[in-house]
Image (cartoon, rainbow, N blue to C red; front, side, top):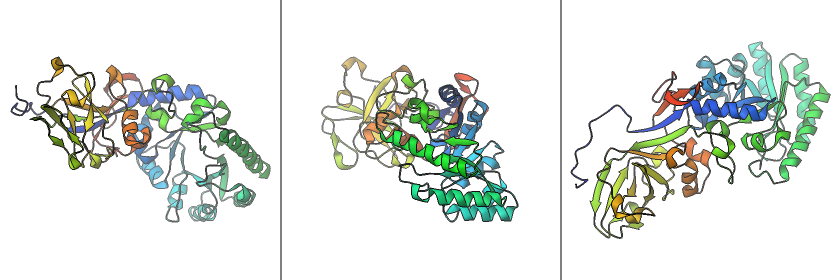
Length: 414
């Protein structure tokens, strides 16, 4: 049967392309990370639209599953949580002179403070007639935001002076690790020591700390000495491994996002057919090409030729250059290893094409796309664009994969 003349299947209500978010997997991962971090509390980091998974549904699921705090980079993100009726403790830590500190104070959002923000936060608290809650950040070696060690004493002193005025409370001290995903490296030990020293300075100056927090996901999983009062888990709650030598399954985590679409076209081509811009791939014999309607406008890295696409139980690598809206797979012997003539598909037009998911049934994983693009797994999931609707299944009750009560389609999506 010639796949180019097969009529399309009857239209159904399944989106043409979608990122299916399994909230049961989120809940499972929260429980797994809580058990590892206990007795420390757990912050679920939902910045960047929950790493592309949808901030509001993920935040609600995380809290229902036992997360104690939520974390965002920007105040604007934290305010969206409040607008959604989420009143759990929230910390936002990355600010600019345009940050709405007054709104943050008014909405009871905790604020990270690296130095310059302190006076602005105090002014906002004065205007709102409500004390701000701040977490002082010390740069213990990452070299991004956070007070330098040289400036720490002065920052702590100024913060305590504002605290004595009743304008704020220093409720936390935190820092961020640079190489926790490489547990053998000694820099983490140096950062822990620097953090302990910074905490001691703050406490000696009069800070009554509620939470000291340093650990990210890799440190939560590999360095119990970093747990302190709370861990901040981002990547792990989405079921992704931060380590090159350990998979999600080995860590007891379940990937929550499945990216899938429908095969848009099957086309027989002769030997010597070039594929996509640049004609970097040329068929070595007559074959059937499959058109996959996802591209770099959907967040797929343009350079990720060779990334896996699973159709009808068989995984094919992308051939040729990935375009803005589409990519191509070769159903024939040149498109995959282990080919046998008996496996030549009929028309796959309309069949589900999975780019990555939880690995069930031998399906592809996001790490394979990261490898193809020369990047990391969390960049791939975070960059999936607004053009791809989010569909939610499951919930805090268990890994059943059934439709949940959270908003469907793209509410809370990228």
